[in-house]
Image (cartoon, rainbow, N blue to C red; front, side, top):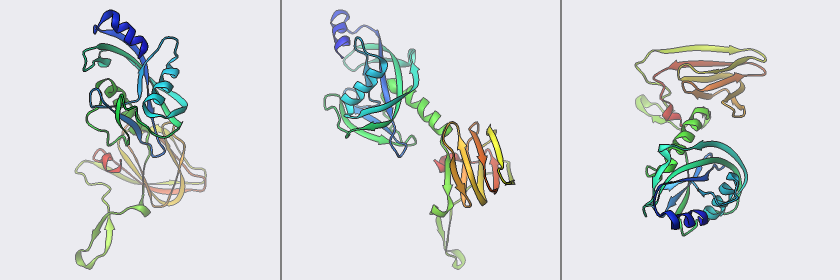
Length: 267
């Protein structure tokens, strides 16, 4: 932080506007990288403030490498953050109003090595298991990312991979996993798609479940690529999630719609 350090010599700890960038690094398992900061003992994103003459992408790449030893091969813009939520007072007293540009990086190289001056630990987390002690300036960013991520992520339950509760009553021997248990109104129907059948892209008006019982096809949500589904697969969408279903040769499915559908069990 050369520029900021020089500025602090002149103005002390009084509030300043600090421009910078950070990076959401996503691995092949769709987990994101967080670092445990030494100064506040909170988990946050790799990133930092801009030096004179740098572009925001320069900042993101430099900070990522300095703090994690990873080289970003490609960055995509996620969002820009500013305002009251981005105010922060460092443990040593310096006050800042951050203006942060956040990038997503899915293509990177290098071995994870923490900057021992700033970071005590590096770890990948799933969006459903983020630690509770998130660094305050990163909290609105991670909240946005996880909500966006959950809104576009396909939830697919492969029934041939399910390990449910083993039932042994009455001399039985089988596994069962509950898909829905609710006292709220539910709608159950059977859907048939013929050759080149298509359910056009639209937002779900209610949480819903598609249980493929015959044939195979494709599903997608948001801007994600199509994913192949076949007999025995269950696809789950939340309210407001855009989605599309298609098939080349035909497919039959049971459709279950209910406000009582618990999406968390399929995360």
